[in-house]
Length: 311
Image (cartoon, rainbow, N blue to C red):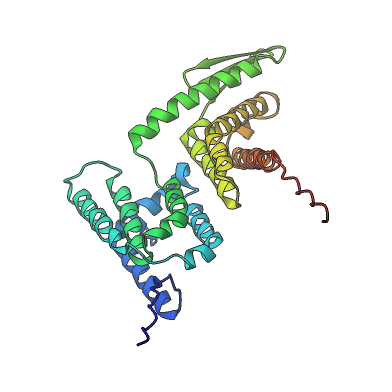
């Protein structure tokens, strides 16, 4: 008697047909509604959107989700082939995130970052619940990248900002003192100059040298590391270079601003001109990161294998 062939079990993979699109839209609406006090995009805005719109330190926030979506787009073919396994892991994560959010709203948890953290944990749970645990192999970087859009706790922010400002002021005064006839001195996080009998004073703002600029430039570096396919060791080098390159670009910005104030016009330290200089520094950082990426790409060149002689 012939036996029936064994049935091969094929795990269900991620599909994005019309029912799946409708399901994703409903989940997105439910997610935004749940965290409406953070994501309210109607004036006077939720707390997170308000920081993006009104706080210059986090004005880059709206661009971060767009780039995370772009990273998902780059991995879309691999994501569609991921098997939906261990989706149940997402349920406790989502439940834990929601409980933390409720506790933060009710005042049981007084940690200021708790609401933002609970939103990110809930989002991670939703991703796993809908797409399975293996999808994180491709989605963990876009998820982590979203943290660049979330203001860090104020205590940590202030503790990191002040040393960066003082460091930038010290470097700028040291460099500018190399100019003949110019005397510079750092007073706290301010710079005082004497040139041809005139005194100038510049306050080193957070935008020039603090965490605002550092976070933005680090986001640029991580974007360069993951925009194209490259080995993990190259990505680790680019990520490790984020803070040194951001600090170097901050030094350049402060030094150029001081030079323009003393030798050209003090108006270049404020307003539109200052903002344009900040954009130029971002382009400089992007150029440095791109240059390092190019060097890493050409550091090892694969030689073609020699053809074996004919028999």
